[in-house]
Length: 329
Image (cartoon, rainbow, N blue to C red; front, top):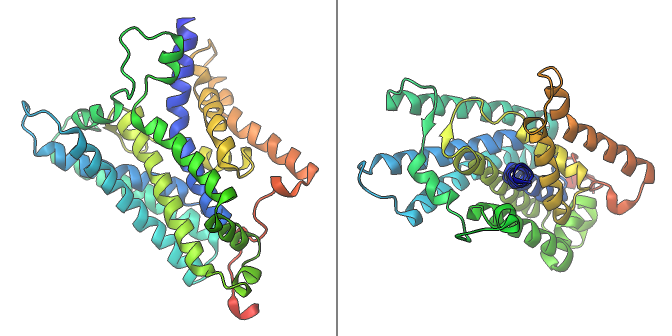
């Protein structure tokens, strides 16, 4: 029973960066932009937050306690700025210059990983550490502190109420996004741009503005996923190439939840559980990679089923991945 509780609690923590990454990509794709640069943006968001937290922690003496408010403000602020700049690069190339979205996204992912490793390596050199990682243990405590401190928690509290604030922030963001898409004028305009930008343009909707906003806001939310992985899940430990394939899992999750932010909440936890399942069951080392493929296998199954059923509400935006040329309207 104890092992099951730990597994479920870990699944939520493991799924949170996927939830943030998928929510950000859903927002972007609702505007018709296919951003395959999300893994790179998450990487840039993570290293940007680490840089901010590193220099804040550097100003503290060993005896000085961390100001939780400043630690969170500086770290998250740097993360959002870095993610925004990366998203603006993608938006400028694909929306203004009308570059191919697939190629641009893949290039951004490669650039983001390289940039993160460069600055991560630079921070390691600054500390003159003998180990190949940077530890932000003081800053991490401000993020990992449980929102609901309970002295003698039961199984429910251990699974759902023992996490830092970013776990609940990710859920709130997904719920708000779902509400905006369904219940607000802004969400209606965004969906219209993603379905048929020419018609939206003819109706007086600023297509370029909506695409820029969706891409930048989505990128910043995805960047928070990268920050969460480093500061909360990894307890403030940054090591180069430590993200693994989580950015790609976030992209796969978008298809798995058929572009619905509400469904991304349980979907991300399912992905998180499947991703770490091999750590909680006795399997051979040769079998472990196959078990880690389960989220991708489930995505393929969902993609096949939704393609066969051909329900419009289960399909991606009609103009997804297509550049809009106003002159062709």
